[in-house]
Image 1 (tube, helix red, strand yellow):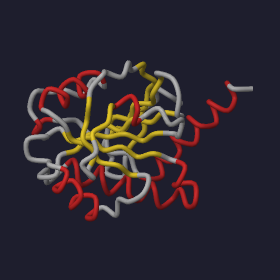
Image 2: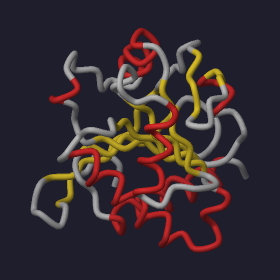
Image 3: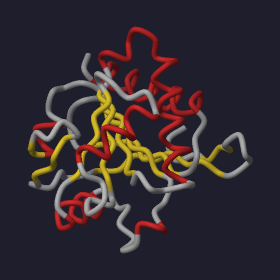
Length: 181
């Protein structure tokens, strides 16, 4: 089903496809103030759900964040084994303290980390994931999924429902298990 388009609850198209992403060598700042490299954040072998947000967004970002919060709820106890990563596309405004407040709003917690960084680092990361638009107001609703290793990600374009995202995620993990045997 990768590459096939489905519809979100609103009727808008949702498309998932496999993409290769080379992680850039950038330093980001986690909401707790700790500086880390993106590669180290994503190298712990846990499955990853990643998106791009900015905290003053009034449309796309709250919808994506709510969808991820509901997706995490549907994972049940397995959510402790999934690393959710939200990266700010507005690092000038989204300080670690601001990100901590945003995390509380969407019931973030262990396993859901928020990152900011320099404007340059933010642009490099967005470009490597193919979501850079030059203006935060025109950012696309995109969620990325990875089984925990490698460079292949599932890119989900559109406002997927929590159920759709869970389905993409379960298929991704099943395919990874099939490839490791």
